[in-house]
Image (cartoon, rainbow, N blue to C red):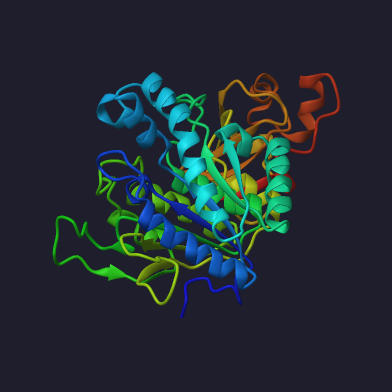
Length: 367
């Protein structure tokens, strides 16, 4: 069976890694890319809308600027390389897609564009309109302005977040390897391929952070993180090899992460977030109440970390780790004053009628 066939998947996100697009000398692997574009054209002709998340800008720019370590010797080098290489990357995609009568569009995003709810919705609207017009969006992280503190750091997680925004029904991460193994196949010839993963926690210890090429920023750890985001939003994700021509055609060995039941769009966005302004620590009773579908009440909160404002995204930390993410109903200072207090005490403490909860269940997503 063809992976995410057009008949069953109307919109697909495909992530292409640096090592697939760029050879060790820093040149575009144009002949291989032409076979991938032909696959995309075939899928488009069959009615599937394809969104591309493309790495490669830093590697391409580093070659043209003569930068050491593939442009990753410093943040400034990476930013300069990205600014230079992105032009080349977009041009190659545009030329090859135009050969099939398909228009390409470029979207450069930062972490904040998909973590801020309003900007996320704007990006979603743009992606939807482009796909509806038959345009193939080429998306990359805007590495020329991103800093270490405000960046995805790998395009695997970016692809999963883009899939949420685009309303996709599938994600393919084209990689150095053809899926997840129970050990690193580069170093262990006895490593066993795992074709289907229904629970990510059961395979998390198998991930290796090393990238086979040394060119990318990911590795299997980043791919598992991407899978968590995608399947939590109800989107199946596959890891497949890009080390073959026409990687999206025919039957290819891959590892498929089975999607969970789709969450409402807002809660899927909350659960898939990568940043938080602070944290609310809770006791075991409060964690259990959240698991049962309740709101986070001040009586079960034990500590506040960070300096967040009302409406900011925070994590909820239970005795066993992070249990939820949600939007705070209070500033951090007010929340600290309410720690452990019952609802009937809060009006006197605050001097005004309190809100129903520190984090309301309508603005909270369990992890």
